[in-house]
Length: 201
Length: 201
Image 1 (cartoon, rainbow over the protein chains, first blue to last red):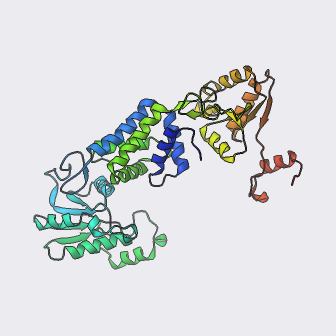
Image 2: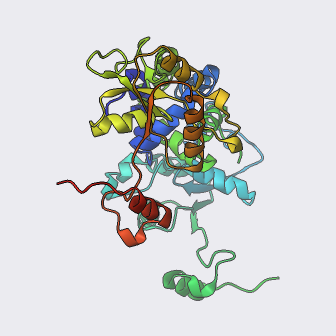
Image 3: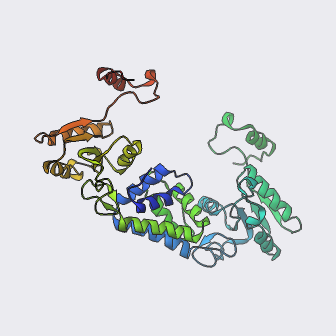
């Protein structure tokens, strides 16, 4: 479709490169921005510039941070002997949201996915091994999504850590809160019976 | 959800202000941008800055343009005696795409919608009346969407143009190409029978 303005076209193209945003949606978003105050759009542009200029990755856990070490790694009240391995920053935020975890993290930056061309060398697995070799860590919790890619990555890390004295655990799998038993898939339900736990009140 | 970085937070907030983009989607988009080349994100920001700094509205038809007068209004090959009244810029592009129209446009910038607080004074209706009073226009095509708001706006414009010598037409309504007759709503089907046309091959 021919655009009446090259600047409009550039803005639409920029939005259309984002995942899940097609050309029509991009157009709708840009026309929305054109109806906003000029200052609001400029502050949107500014937010993007600040983002790439100031966001770092924590040199310990690879979480997103504004400083050299992230607030979690820098916090002396956290238990630095327990490391929770997650796929990305969103998972850190989701686990933090639960307020049930007081250890530290290690953000892989993805999971092994040959279909997407992501191999172990593209992830922060080497730095995890180094971190463990430095000592002081008693437990590694593998908290990856229970998908084919997540399970593959967990198994790869488990093998990589074979020579290191550390307890390796993984998050519990089972029937989710408020799920109806007869709608639960058979793999989940089967495993939740095999891996049943003591009833506690 | 607590963010590990204020810059991340600002960027997520900027995206979350866009229509149809919630907080989780905004987060996904920003994390996608963080995985891109720094130059790509900066050119995204640049596209937004250029957009608000350089995009004008044509002083004749209020279409988006980079120059004072848009390419359609400035084109001497277009029929300047026929004006097609549309809701917004996307409609101009949709009609241009058909390659069936050779007149000029008048972009209202919306339709009358009391629910959204949009009244006739918020639209380019006054400038349409002025344009017609200057003469040289034989036909006005009301090409608004066949919705409650579109019909209200068409009727309002029709009344406003009462004293002006001009042919007022509207786009044909009927069964859309490839629609199945028995799935067509009864209002559309009823009107397409009442307003039937001569069969041409």
